[in-house]
Length: 251
Length: 261
Image (tube, rainbow over all chains, first blue to last red; front, side, top):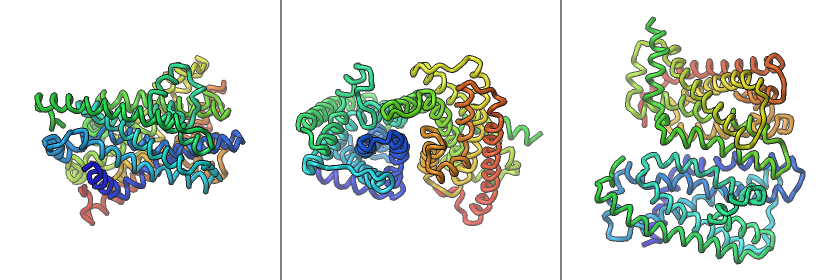
């Protein structure tokens, strides 16, 4: 059921060429600004750093901005009640949707890598291709599980899209996409290391440069599953509350 | 008298009715907190790359962020009417179009000014950027000019909303173009020539340069040329916007596409 739901949602989300174009183009503006900035440093390693980081930013963007308004969109289309009364756990309904969303971030990732290569001559080395691919898959899964938790947490917040948009910049800032964590105060590092994208980003960088990505990969997966479990627990509570208060279809 | 009422009263009512982001649950995260994170993001990228100063990124991004309220609110002036099924009603009124649409721009300029000034003050506090006390008043003037100029650009975007259904996406793309081309994070002389040339024809570019000059100790007189150019650029976009609104209104009536959702 998970696979079928994932595939159906992926096809539905990919149906709008305009949205797809935007998901590719939006992170490209920020990637371009970052490339132009790092280009001034005259350090080719800095450009590779920015190239890899920018490419993962899009996955975070898709999840931060869209997962937060996921349930609200189901409300608008009148399908939330149908999902709620489906004879399956609510978490199993939502996870395929957020996973499909994160998968769409792959478009953006590939586009950013191509953009960096063609316009800025950024050649990203991939020393461990298998590990590199695995790190991307695990990062997508973990980010989608954060998205799942986010979609559940903000279910009572009718303007959740604004919160989702707000989360985009902090994620870009502290997850090590474009700025090394060593530049931040120590407490920011603690917050960053509690988020799977930070570990996923490190794993992708390690797999690219030939470093040991195993621990980062495990931490990314473990934290993602933890957020997923938290989301599953919360979803039942939130659902009970919404049904008891008759707020399921409150728009 | 009717045109004056349409300009002031109609403009304010439309802004309050159509710009749903005035809800504090949206306004605070989208207008007050997000720009601070945009400033921090680029200031830290600059620190990481060893390029620019905090002041450079603070001013560039604080002024550029006025594009969010200015572009989105102007787009909503058309798209919001369409969504509420009132666009047809507005378009059949005998009200003159100039006060009708320019009146909708005035509250947008004020809001853009508030957002940019808040970002500038809060960003300076967070990053510990010291701007001379004497620079704040002329800075406020430049920020107001930037907001007005960007609203002129927004008027052109609003006109496109008569034909483009996904105007929110279009607006985000315009925001991204302003981010890359207007010398927000990379000085114009460090951009490739063609990008700098495009940037000089866009709103915000000259205002950002003027604001940086003021923060660096220049007087208002020193940057008056840049401020004048910024006003001119904004006025040209506003004029193009009004013109295009007229053309696309006629076209929309002819093709029956005004209320196409």
